[in-house]
Image 1 (spheres, helix red, strand yellow):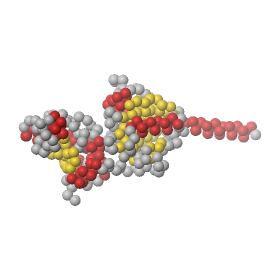
Image 2 (cartoon, rainbow, N blue to C red):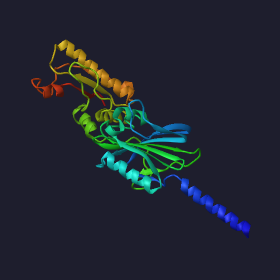
Image 3 (cartoon, rainbow, N blue to C red):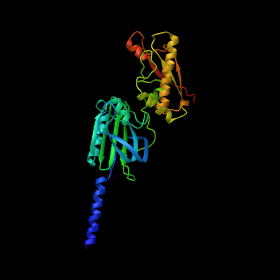
Image 4 (cartoon, one colour):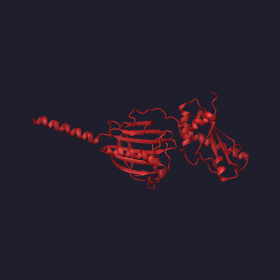
Length: 313
């Protein structure tokens, strides 16, 4: 009898312990979430941020085990990045996780913080350096880090889970409860519609200072959307056409505009993973203005790059 009682007690203890260390039952992302990327390593090491960037590095807790990275896109959602993060944080707390650290954009340390904690690049994971949120948490020997941001058309979630080898990974799904598609997220429609209706689209957010061919920012929503448009169908071809304002001579501006187009092409290929055979570059200087060059605002509009669809069928 004592042996039976002892076995029952031991079984109950094992059950309690397994429940204490079990990962979250599931993450419910907003409806329509689409998985963009996933990587897993059975024996990895990850640093989960525990404080803001201190001027030299991001203080972190080093954890080892089975590491799973996932990136999700939530097109069409009206939720801001903080709303998405808050919902996920509440799910963690409800499931028994302890929050290690939470911060937002500037309070995290901005650019330096984002590029120490991030894993995936656009278009899989888009991060607005002025609008992102981060949280790290743990439940016994299970650890999670979340990076959340959004573009004008979608929210993005990057998640890293670290668990003991062989442990099940926390399932993630849209709020409908149905399995989430692992395909490429559908385009928001604005850039694609412009390209296919008029044959051209200005790449909004691609900015240059007067006389410069260097992009002022590396992550641009329009470039992420164009990259998605091209990777969804590798038969599509676009020419990137650079434009300048009217300061300076024509010959110099044509050369500068070509450099600007090449700069964007390089960004699409190297940063966003577009096939080099799908893009080409050209420049026309100040010969096709969008606005008057008599005002600073007009000149700023004229310093741009457009995508021109050149498919013949």
